[in-house]
Image (cartoon, rainbow, N blue to C red; front, side, top):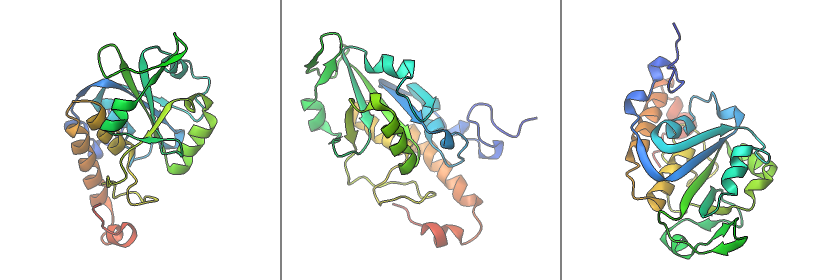
Length: 220
């Protein structure tokens, strides 16, 4: 008998399935996951994949020639957003949505569209450490032309079981939660509920004093 849950892939004692609820969204979510994150016990991408509908999770480092990714990128009347805090990225907020334009590959021109049934919105998330996410972005040249966005810098992360490079660094799941809250009217709270349960379980497994000593016991 397997020690792992067939659905969420975690050890059965760490199974999160009871906390996972479907989040129906008008925004399509695509997760580009670095291979090193696939079996990461503290990873959050699987929770997003199991919760958000529609959502696709792809594993790799270089997606330049990935047929599905290129098909999505070239899809007309679609706003493709890449969550990546680059020098060119814009803050994802209500003002950005009102001013944005998308590239209509069929017309070969920029077209201003509002959120409606005529315009599909797709959100690309890169899942990996900062170093691995940077590598995916650098290798995947087809991502460079997408609308790059970052979340408001005042948002604080709750991912207290992994050290972050800065105070406002967010996990992939937290990024998905906040992005969907801005882009869509759906209730994405189930994402955070499952996330908090995962964090609580991981903290409970640590030897006494380890959390406070190495992670600061912080609740950001």
